[in-house]
Image 1 (cartoon, rainbow, N blue to C red):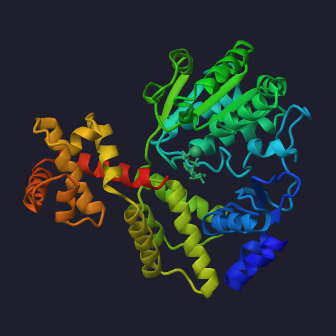
Image 2: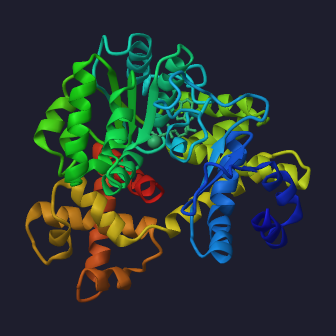
Image 3: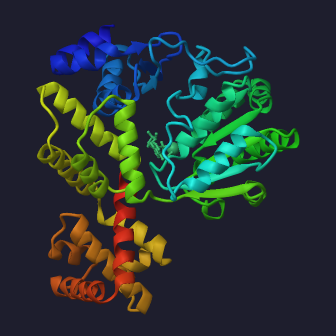
Length: 441
Ligand code: ADP
Ligand code: MG
């Protein structure tokens, strides 16, 4: 309450009334290092988290001396929280401190997921696994880029099975790891193992964070064997194929490949349009078709970012008591894109290009004249010119070149190739997209 009072003094009254007032603080579940709030819907949750998460955390620090992680969960005030059978063992929907990691978002269901050719395979696999856990593909491994719906599908499997009385554990790999270290330190590994090895379905999100975490990998290996051996379902997500997760033990990797591996591709335009319409419908927001189309065509493929735009548009329109016009939407989208490119550095570009073209970052920055390295370096220069505010001289300096003529030569070469080669052009666009989305995760 004190913290909300402080916040009230710092932010516009209208935003306080519209968003902050709707939050409920979960005193029981929060700890000094984690502050949990409930918001009545995903839009408010996201708005609060992005606009005020840092501020709230800072205010806590002022009051308590500890800076907590601020978590905003979604819980509609009417509905009771989801609770699965099994009391103590299942941590879903209970209000114990350790429970927050396993709360499922009730709005992430199969029904609220828009299916298109980019995600059809993953969707169908998820649905079949949800219907017959442990019987079909075990594990199911879903991978794909940021904001493409992996976590949504994981929750959908969880919600589906929770409604059927099965014990579901949803956890991000990071939470799994944190809990593991916590129990290890407190000599309570029995409890940790009881919990993870007694569920019917284990949903593990963002498994790529296993990379080089040897102890956690070992523990997960045993958890996996125990569950798999007992015919329990395991579903995992990652931003990459198991083969591409660096520093992953071979025995885990091979297990991840035992079942079915499916990917989610960036959505096509029609799917994006359908998703935007669905989100508007679910949140009671009206956007004209030309606005929906404009957002879909200009905002890239990260659905999370697209949702962010919808939230902003709606919030501004509410605040100013105005309808959302196309011009207004264009402005908001442009600002967002501008903000995005301001965050990109040359190093980000080098990182993505070197990975995609299979050369080392150090080689790109070296003076090597070998053909593929020169090509990669030129692409970096071209992308840095279009995605960052760096001038030609500052790029020359970055690459240790004598002056900007080498930079302008590189630009000329790439421009020629883009004009003459459609495939190359597409490749550059793809790289550019990868860079902007990687920087925005
Ligand atoms: P990921 O885990 O792949 O990064 P999320 O599952 O968190 O992505 O999705 C980001 C947001 O986009 C979520 O709010 C999710 O509901 C939404 N989303 C993504 N794909 C779809 C889809 N096909 N239909 C409806 N919503 C989607
Ligand atoms: Mg996710």
